Length: 348
Image 1 (cartoon, helix red, strand yellow):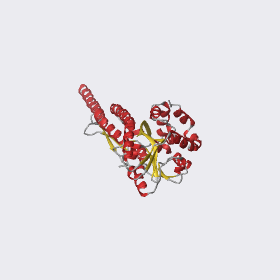
Image 2 (cartoon, rainbow, N blue to C red):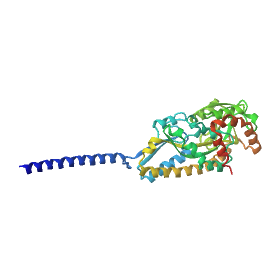
Image 3 (cartoon, rainbow, N blue to C red):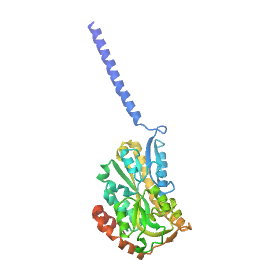
Image 4 (tube, rainbow, N blue to C red):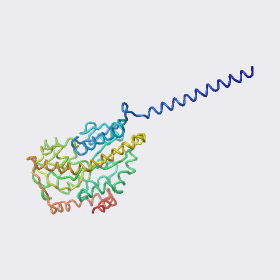
């Protein structure tokens, strides 16, 4: 009888332990299934940007999506939303922080609200040429703002730079040749105190207008002119609403890729590696395309028959640079001399 009772107790214990072990296996299996993404149920990365699909940014974003699909065998899907389809200039950063989108590629000046050093890109004549710009993108100097504590504290991670090009002035009144030609004109500008100071130094006015609304503002005469790359000018069809363009190359319009930090770090490692590899390749493409597309767009503008293009001499650009020196006096402290001098030291 005692033996029978002992065997019964042991049998019950074995059943209970087996059941517990089965629960653990079941939980483990459930957990694994939640982290597993397939071509039928992929991980979705929402990528929002404000330029057209024909722009450098648009082409690079679409190539990134294609590469991710290829490298992850469809387990990750990048949904690209161009032309402010989801969020415009003024909203996409907040959308990234809140997690409503996972990736954006804004003009770097949009980051000024988080870190004033991002205004470096608007400093007049800071960069000498495209080679100088690329040297900066790959430098330790760039990493000091791309991976800053200010970004991390806002749940943002900077990944890479996508070049766009040098900015040039255009307007509807007359050719811009000398400093005096800017007086009294009103220009569309991105948000930022540096740009306000730039136009003030030229005795011109400025109005902060979203990129997607700029064409209408020029068409309606809300502003007389704007500053942009050749490619943006061309793909946004500003030749339909602007009469004069001068090759000032006075500032830069560049982008950077920012992601929602929490989301990015939650991507399983076996998927994150090919996604980052795809982004590296798309970044190389973006920077290669920028020079090519700007050259093509410049020819398109000159051949449009609607825009009078004035190619400024170095002496005329130097005079413009001299007139804009008060901008450095006003903003060197905010942007920091370390960053400005670090960029200048990269010139060859």
